Image (cartoon, rainbow, N blue to C red; front, side, top):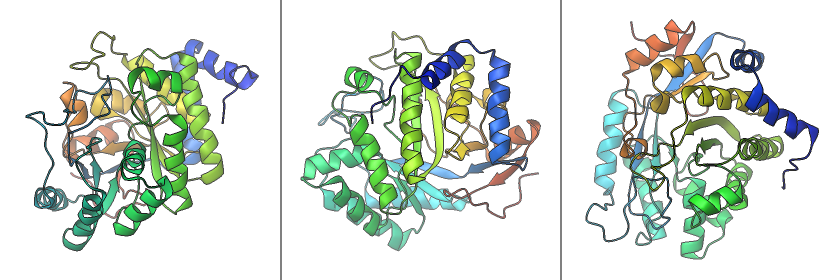
Length: 350
């Protein structure tokens, strides 16, 4: 679907994003949040991000994590190493793993299926894995349709798909910063196919790569339109580019005000996506708290392990107690959740 940037609605949202008073924008987003979530509860999940490989041929200019094939720092984790990481996650009450990697041309498709079956047989846990960009890569690499890739991964044990690789869903931007990776229609096509096959997914936006305010608004319009048809997105997450150590190191990192404006606009535009995460891992706990008054109702993940953002030199850490304290200090009740946002009956830390 092409987005018509000349409509009054589109122009009004660009104007709101660029010119509205920050606190007024936050109030609009906060009001929309309370319409959807009447209880003063902020959720979070305990999980672990497992990057099964860092070998990648996508050559994204914003990524400091990947290594080209045959690089001495390249790796592929063994099933046993992945299993150990899962057990460490489960030992602290982990509910899921986030399983993502690079576009590694040397891994056969059967390896992914065997891995999922191994996880379900030996280390049963919710697997939130393989971003739409990875799925498109699998389809191209192995001569399969996207529908077949999703079907086989799902049958082998994949439970849901994360929104990684979303960046900005405008092809002109994607061609500039990640031309070897899935373009907008391909990326959204994976999301819709997963929804058709009964899987839920999350959706993301990474901004600050030199795109315009209109590009960011178009991104929100695109995901809103998919959600209108499928109702398959459980959550939206946005964060700014972490340029350090990447080919975009010359780009100025956007500030907390831009983050709060972007988050608030997402809540206002995408009222059909029920949950918005506060990205404290990239923004820090203090800004993460403020985000809870700018549309966010979820505090994201404990992020027991995180490699991609930290490879760029910018990441924030917190314990479960620190996360729950931050939520409480912001005036909310912390509650642990599952991937589908159903609540767990787990007492909060004292």
